[in-house]
Amino acid sequence: MPSQRVQSKVILLNSDGKVLIARRSEYSERRANEWELVGGGVEVGESPEKAASREILEETGLIVSITTQDLVFAQTCMYPTGVNVTWLTYVARTKDDSVHLSDEHTDYKWATVDAALDIIKYEVQLKALKHAQEHGFLG
Image (cartoon, rainbow, N blue to C red; front, side, top):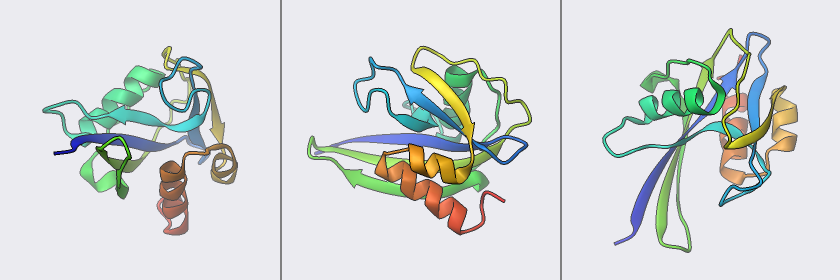
């Protein structure tokens, strides 16, 4: 039986409507030095929404509340390694844009949605961001 993982990612918007993206550390096991949306893995017994809030706090120092109504995109992929990953992407807003990065990331920026679409390379995150933009979730 394949193993399963759930990832909670967040399209975090500031008061100017810009998206927070962060550059992964050069020591990351996967996608080192790539830009991404903030968020991460759901732990056993944790809701995806709590995981998203926890990951934002751990990675950026920002306190953000995520609810099930903030979910805008979901995708499941079976990887060649036999791991089934479900990606859940939420939209949240913050008035506090003073980011304090953890060691998981080396840089961050508040980017326009179009700039974020140009910078992010990971396909599932691009799909989520495009979907949110095309269907009016970022306005």
